Image (cartoon, rainbow, N blue to C red; front, side):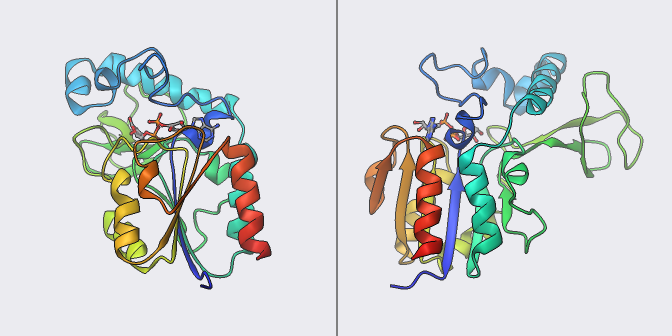
Length: 237
Ligand code: APR
């Protein structure tokens, strides 16, 4: 069957080779924290200083990491693929953009869990691009209030762009999942949705994931090797 319409889902595993920590490592901690201590609205209400400091560190750390071969392969796919393409990432880093996926290119890149380099003003509701720290309570670029939080989707909050993602999954003829443990919904359910609508499904992951058995095909290995190989296959074939 000819492939015209691809939906890709990426998770923390695609950035692991760049040196960004995954969430569910062997110690069960994320950069030394339990996820529920930093990535929930309750944690932010309880201890905003700790949460702001944690995300300030994550944002600053983006300056020390570089896109790897997998991100760059997607940059190539974005430039050379003439069919439909949607790249949905659960990652809050900016390595897909820096790997060459143009966020403005027909809106092909969606950050469903938000982005470290974005802020959300709890006073005026505006979302803005952001580079620096938030700990010192800087003013919102839109309204001037000191009520900015990271524009990250925390546990218990609604992921972004779901309407667009579901429409794309319904139209996809190939769904590819890369570097995600399949532990967090709704992203973990995309494979079943894509299959139900008739897409072929492929997983590229280092380890067996919680959802590996749901895919038509599952390849094991580091994203830095598997993704460039797969992109070559798609563009070459
Ligand atoms: N190449 C490919 N896969 C890898 C690599 C690699 N180099 N390194 C690790 N992996 C795989 C792991 O085997 C694991 O299955 O990536 C997966 C990472 O899983 P998680 O740490 O659970 O990350 P993710 O699935 O993105 O987490 C989902 O949970 O807390 C949240 O909101 C956060 O978006 C995140 C969501």
